[in-house]
Length: 140
Image (cartoon, rainbow, N blue to C red; front, side, top):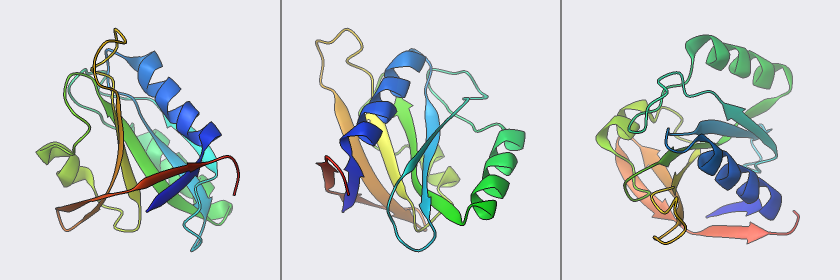
């Protein structure tokens, strides 16, 4: 199960909506070994695409060095789908290289406010996708 604060949930959703119609992406870091998401880090989608996301390699290297310096790890890796449900695509599976992370997908296909909004979390290990419950709390 993924447990995160309402504030983090709201930041992820806001980023996904702000970048629509392009896919948004980012990371929520937390203390190594605790599995607790704490620090919201929106990233630039270097692909600038409505159907694909890609972290800028330089930004990603900088982020991992920064997390290492702060004794953090990626707890949540998130991105949005702009026209499809919040379920990992084949491309998403090929990028899922953090077996300890929660992979959050937000569907912004409801950008007009009339469709189904989705915020879903998965564990992805060796291309095996397992959906997990999301629990939003006021504070830890």
